[in-house]
Length: 479
Ligand code: ADP
Ligand code: GLC
Image (cartoon, rainbow, N blue to C red; front, side):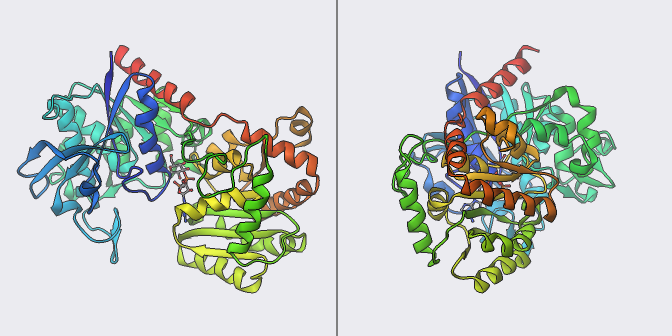
């Protein structure tokens, strides 16, 4: 019998993406269908999204007053995914991004995502207009955090899961908003909604959900420790028995070098195309000859991602023949630092500040190595794209990076299992050392090509992880 799960999130590929969360939310419905779970994705109807539905939108729910205005829910399909869009113009119809506009974060983000969570819980209680009613509510990150809590307050007959994609964002709000957010005042306690005097929607979800997941086994362990838990380590550790880490997968329809429309095709068995893509990428960025490894970075340029470590290692890396191409946007200081590095060595360093999906494919196709020196990384997707594309990942040994890349130490190389380079801790010294190892490895052509092929043979698709989500949902219903 097909069972039903309502996924509640603030972004979803192909409708809106600012990071890996959207990739995961968009991939899960297709992957879960193989396990007889029907998932609908609920997200805000940001401007322009309703028009993107492939089917005529159907009104499935209405509310005359959802946190200060009228709202309805429109159901439809996009790229085969069943989506339900919460259409509440007073909350979502604004120019700018999903979380912030030109003036910074929206003043009412607490209300905006509490409304999404509240409507999700209401659906769990009463079902949608077409008779669809979930068995499981699956909330993502702080934006969905209040949903498991509202489910409890409304006594909606579903089991709940919350997935932490990034503990750095916790949905803090002024406790004076308690009533406006339809939260029971007596729940403002240290063991419920209260977080150091504020409200936290993420904490609300962590406390209320039947199960907590995060996006890699190592991050599940790290989250219970002060170095990574960002103040919520105790809350998560107290619920350790319900915590699990399920690795993200890769959408292999989109990320396969043998059928990538941006590339000369190649595969582990036929690598010739990769050299063509490398040459084309070097030309696209106007670089000169790059005799050493051509490293790429495709990333948000933020402190989390350890981008600040890169400039310090560049002189020596370029001296050994390396080249670097960076695609990303984020903090102004980091954008400035990489742009400045490129101005100093335009023959070896290329930088594109911005977001460009097609270019990212050409970079994975043409690069030799992908750098991911993150300070923390719940899962990380780009190291997996690197594996799939024979673009050897050089990563900090943290979170999902540690779970997906096998370091090319002598033991792993002689056993024939290495897939990349890992370093620890995330500091300039360890990163510099890893970059030296990268140059040496690149010169050892036989070992290098073995490592590339090992990566390309990994099973990175969603089959294993979706089976784990399905098993988790089933265990909750059986409990
Ligand atoms: P995070 O979600 O923390 O940003 P992930 O590695 O999980 O990190 O996911 C990032 C996603 O966004 C990947 O799909 C990556 O390719 C993509 N991405 C990041 N920056 C850019 C960019 N500037 N242009 C194109 N794609 C990008
Ligand atoms: C977050 C994390 C990233 C993870 C993504 C999807 O954005 O920073 O590591 O891959 O969510 O789960």
